[in-house]
Length: 345
Image (cartoon, rainbow, N blue to C red; front, side, top):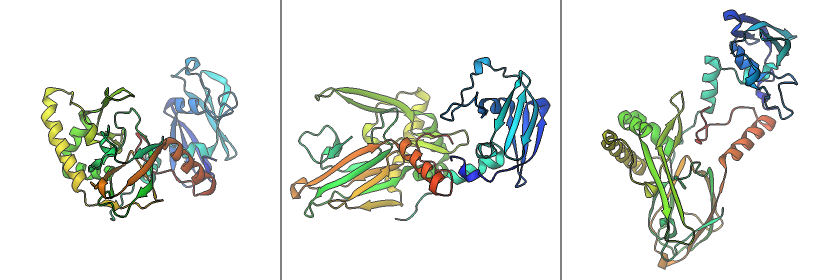
């Protein structure tokens, strides 16, 4: 079912190349894909190499990684069969939809990347968010909240955030929410200030959320660059929270470069023209990707009335999983768009 989009893939021809290191498949649509001997060995779909959960059970401790393919053929156009030099009694089998789905030819990789590319919109546990005496977090005050993502000192910050407006008196002055797509900001920074962009890719920032003056004490510090790229140079992660920046701990020669780049990014975040503003009303629920969408709040006068939001988080991996399941079972089978959770696809 996970290969539903490629159900029509059919093998037109098979060739063993490079002394058995690779197999090349010609597909019924005229394109070609090449697969390495060990890629196929790890991906074998025969009963002895595949668990009931459809995960591979090949133990590479028992595999000769220098083994080559001695034969490759087909059973009709529905199954590729392969045998290797180190175990001629073992026949590997591979469904064409699987091979087409995971083809790593330049053409197929580019098509997948294009399909998963983020689209930027250029049109304009639970926790309570309300003002409290002696707040331990600026969110629990009436002060303005700068644009930020939550829980940046975590190794894996929350994915999907829900904010439910329980009460927002009409008399309250201020308190409107605003949002910015930080991936869009980072891509713009790359175009307009490439040197500063690469400084934020290269130099690790410190994210700090340490409390010893409250009942639940904790000490959470994490270092990572503000911007993470995959092997293709695509942005796969941005971490941004001005209120949780700790002391910079880096090489002396990087200090000036970091602060120059940080200033540039901070200015762009706060002046970005594509910003969504809204004033929540009682009963409203706003949901967003905490790892991609920065959120903030204008200052409000707590004496003018009550403003009470309640929030919770959902793991983005589970959300993405369900999107892909529904796409494969009742949709068009396209790959889910990259969501910004350090997935290198």
